[in-house]
Image (cartoon, rainbow, N blue to C red; front, top):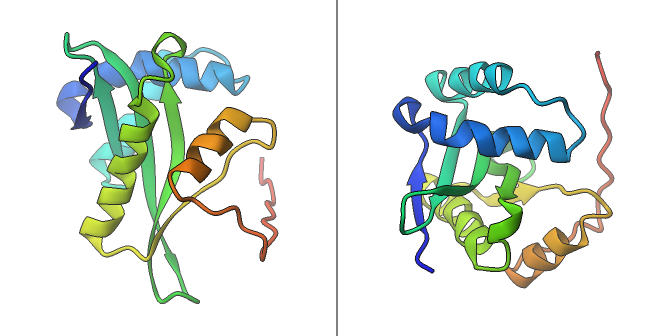
Length: 150
């Protein structure tokens, strides 16, 4: 199967919404396409994220990767944060996730970022296998903490 990867813009945002909604439901969030469209529109309009979408050869959207930009003081450079990756369950194991991750790596190289960073659930073993197969290394030097304000 030939997969085509395209950058998401306002003009093709509707192709992303159904996939993003499935992704959020996977992470136990309520289905809310309207809310997610507003959120994603803001990220695109404000140039806060770079999103790529995967299409089949028949132009059906089947996956996406959402990247944010950050910085590392220690590394003295920018970082691409691969924040969200999703492939439709019926399209998995066809190289789509690999192609989407490659888009994030290419984005990092094109923008001069020092690395691509990501996090995944401890129990998401299939994703961990894919990331490690593609050359990502699990961090053994740092613990990451969060402080919730909501």
